[in-house]
Image: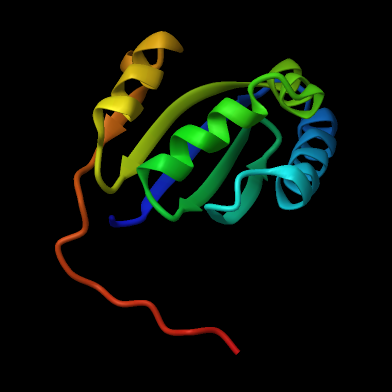
Length: 125
């Protein structure tokens, strides 16, 4: 199945706490997270806005990642520092993904932007 890319926008309340939380969360996901998370990058361009760009192997990895991290203290620290304002989801949408979105109350903040029509990826060095 095709990869899923999520672009999350955060309304940051505490920039220093956000930065510390995402460093800790990224470290934990790399070490203990779902193996289908291919990339996990956070950005903050202004004191009050942050973004994450996350690439998953597919829908199962998207669901599995969220199931794993939901109870982690690193995610709680991120939630204490920022609110998830919006999610742009690129790639396939499965019933399991939609069920997770519905259970977490994300419908109003999430846009599903469809599956890739064309493109390529070059291998890294």
